[in-house]
Length: 555
Image (cartoon, rainbow, N blue to C red; front, side):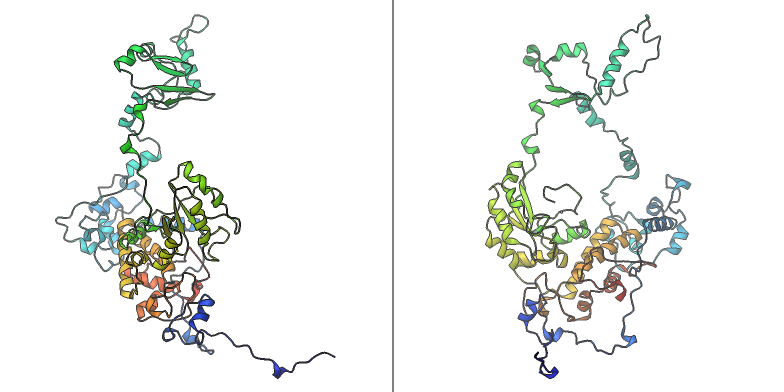
């Protein structure tokens, strides 16, 4: 006979609620312990259609193909003013004239140009002349240009770029020096053979004057031939077993300019310089960077651009690194490829002997990504196995000055800690570490930090419409990280951990509430506070998607 349990005898399971849970229970579930007074009330079960938030028109609804984007860029070029005409306000100043792919109609450009953005031109504010002229979105502030110096342009002009692209750029000073040293390149054997054949009379008593014989390529100015002239040989010396030896008299008088070792293989003749006088001078050698206790901003994709790195320097970073680039690494993109199969500990003892002066270790495998916390015990193990002359820099989940202090105290051999996501979410972490405090930053202070980024962005990408929209794009990419920051004053337990997920909550003012929104539409609204209204047809979707993002259509 089977046991039957009456329906009324079953014990009801208590449903978890963030409004009733303790801070410890929330932390155990990796949820941020927000103070109860800042928690949003539970949503009503009967939601009216009027309460549904309309999607922001600038959110991406469908992805466009590369061909569509290219066609749109071409169409936009027809209404963009020529950069040269924009700077000079003279339609005849463009060297390409009617062949120029940009617009030369100043009046038509002014008629369709968007309104100026509120504020001052970032170049004029810095005391330099704006190179964007009429195209600048702050052109109204260009009225008084007296005493303004020209901008320092950190790029090549179009003609120089064209010569470099076509490999037609000449370097007379460098070529003259290399030619004097006999290091102007490698001579092809076929060229040498052709030259030797060209100097010999042909069978049938014909000479070079009688027959059109193809001679060596015209490479005298760039590639020396193998055959040495007799007068030069008598002055400098002779070749024995592939090594050029200097005559005793020449060596005594000091007239020899160099010694060269010539290696001959099937295809080319290599000239290897062995003259000690050409070795690097001690003052020319690169100085080793001392990374000990330096605040290091990790290389970052997309957001690790120059304006963001400048911002981090202002906020206390000591060392910054440019954006990530594709390269072939020793271990590949951390501790290992697969979780549980770490490999760097077996190699790190030899890395210093291979010539490296520093190595960074990210305490995760490629497979693991951000699903678990960084393995700092493994970083400590590798650090202790490293040679004394190798600086080891750890990386992973540093989000407060307490994290920094713990890693440095747990492993004194560790040179420094590299900060990545922590700096993306709150770049003022460098200030917190240097000042050893939890900064309860206000929404107004955070807005000023965004303004600094916008100013650096306009100086870097330009103050014309293209530069403004490029700055907006990277600002939005950055805002897709900053919304995860939870202000110190809203937490029951500090500091915030990087893997905490906040419940639905609101800030101490409207601006703070807007900044913590996970809606991409609200990020666009923040950009409009700093860079004006988005242009017609503007679209945006974050490049780095995660479970923390809401759907694009929720606005």
